[in-house]
Amino acid sequence: MRTCNLVCQSVATVLVALLQVACCIGSAQAQAYRAILLTPAPVGNSYALGADGGLVVGFVDTVNAQLPMVWSATTGAIVKDLSTPAHPSGIAFGISGSKIVGDTAGYGQAYSGVVWDANTGAVTPLSAKGMNSVYALGIHGNAICGVGEWSLSRFNAGADALLWATAIGPVSDLNPSSGDYIDTEAIATDGKQTVGFGYSLLNYYEPYGLLWNGTSTNPVVLCPGYDSVNGVANGEQVGQVGNDGVIWHGTAASKISLTPTGYYGSSAMGTNGQQEVGWAGLDYSPVFDGPLYQHAMVWSGSSKRFVDLQQFLPSQFVSSVAYAIDSNGNVVGAASKDNFYYQAVLWRVHGPTAGGGGGL
Image: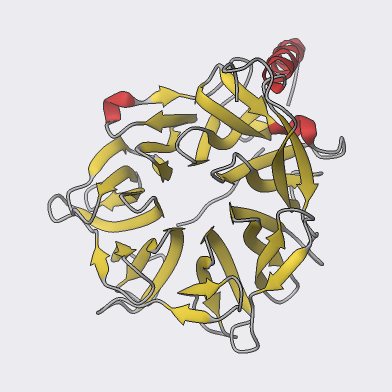
């Protein structure tokens, strides 16, 4: 229930590329960024998934495990490896103040949701009555969202979206009280609203993008079928409908497309309530029926107001994706030199904003 993906050319491709460069230059004048490559993984991939208070969180692949990691947002150096001898593997999905949420596991054990203290590394396990396992995916203030499973297998039906008021509870089961939902997941919360997706008993292969207000078990369906809602802040929700990254403001009818002219498809992964981040595709591949390359993006409310963050990376990087944006506009994600291995990246807001209110 988790994701990440990417993936040839002609005269039309050249024209698309020229269009992209023009958009990129025009938008770049609004706001500049400095790309900081976070300490690379010893083996495999590393991803930055959240940022707050001068820290960045995510994970690093090693030969034997995924290490939940904390980096400095100033230097890009590793501040703390959150793994322990008892729980050597894990993923840090989000951070709010001194609290980090994610999942961790011991050798041969299933992952389980936890809250780490960013200062001490102390771990508080999450739980929910009646659940065989729980997973933590998002945090804002004290509120934590994720999923609990009634079955032993993470990918079986019987998962409910959960919202913890604090790490030690109480916890609310957000699974809809009406309809035929059998599997729901809460991905992100801003403390007032929570977003994610749900599967229908009658159509299990087409997830519905959902918005919960407070602890209500009657979510707003923002998008029905093959879609998801990935981020929320200050009344704004972001996600993907088909091949298009979108913004909503509380209703399905409020949908705003984010795919810029000259790009092929997009996805919005996070928002701080004013700016949205994710990726937009370039170079359509008929083999994959999708873009060959992805560029990390920052939008300001529409497909016409954006910054292509790829331009701030060293030239050897060919693809990138942005997962989260903090309250100061700093962006985290990952970039690749070969469309296979990814390295965690922080794009820091850098330099004055040009043109006053226009742009970012």
